[in-house]
Amino acid sequence: METLIGKKAPLFKAKAVVNGNDIIENYSLEQFIGKKEVIFFFYPLDFTFVCPTELIAFQRKIEEFKKRNIEVVACSIDSEFSHWAWLNTDQNNGGIKGVKYPIVADLTKTIAESFGVLAGEYDYDNDGKLIFEGAPVAYRGLFLIDKKGVVRHSLINDLPLGRSVDETLRMVDALQHFEKYGEVCPANWKEGEDAMKPSADGVADYLSNH
Image (cartoon, rainbow, N blue to C red; front, side, top):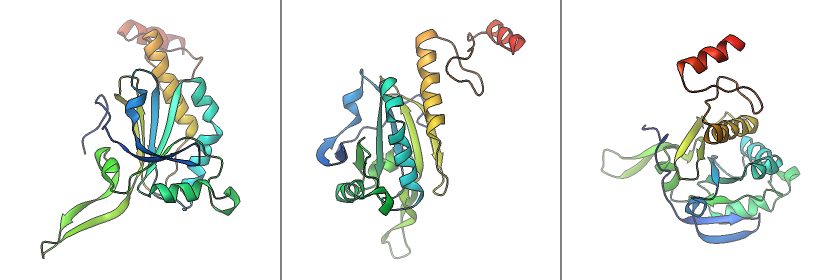
């Protein structure tokens, strides 16, 4: 699989549920180009087990993303009607009521496929019939897309492995620090800590002080 890092994020228009209740047509990430960075993440299925913990965790930190002018958008291969039902089911009944950021419907699986996170692929059997081999859902893919629409960070987990929202925020901070100051961010860097000038002298200075 080719990486999307340093390349334009694939374009799409699809149905989505926004504000937890409104179904809209032709939702696209293009609306944020020149305005906001985007965290675009995939999850396997609505009404499952690990997935609600991730979506609710992102909602609980949504103000932290807003402070950084980041748009959070989720996507799975479920329909907009499934998203709507899940968004309107109480959390103590397995739902994600209270989640307000957009959730895109990728019923055709073309968005997941274009981002390289579809957990399987189409093929032909011995009789020439089109079949799908693997799990017809998305891996837990996450993409940080800058204001130019370019992918700057990606993470893809297998289906059982939930992600860290705090790590996502750390990567946002690192990108924004680099874009503001031109300094690169060393291992385990966090906002407020020393970064490095992108030169041999800068690395030497950093290492001598840490």
